[in-house]
Image (cartoon, rainbow, N blue to C red):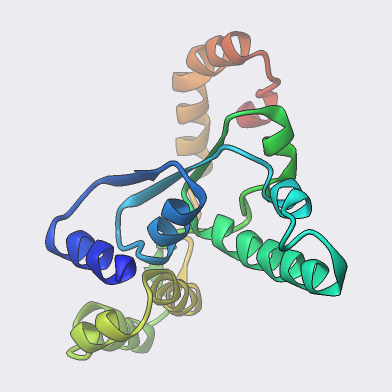
Length: 189
């Protein structure tokens, strides 16, 4: 019931972000994710909570439930855009974000036939409305990104342009490096 209500609200109104604070709310916030940024707050270490629970904590049944819960939690946390931990203990138990994933892959089509494939599959696809209702948002994005990766190639920047941009932003990069206390010299290479 909660899932349907929240999903309906998110479909009806176009929010920029949705924020949740407790385990159940986090779960429903993530599974009803549409286009908005999903921000969840973890207030307790979920593994410790289950271990101390008298119903789930003991025996084989408890171990099995903890295993399933931690697996589902890992999968769901990857779908959240931001996971805020209220303590270091909680932060250590959370899964690190997937930094290797690329979003909105772009470039120029490899050939005219690749451009036609892109136009038919992604840009002017009449089945988009049906697909949007059947598949969750994150699966749609994965499929789109795979198609884009296949179709597009990255154009190379001219060496002169690259050098010009390095010179223009050199001062800003050095100031940022000093401000955040990290080595950004590789940006100037």
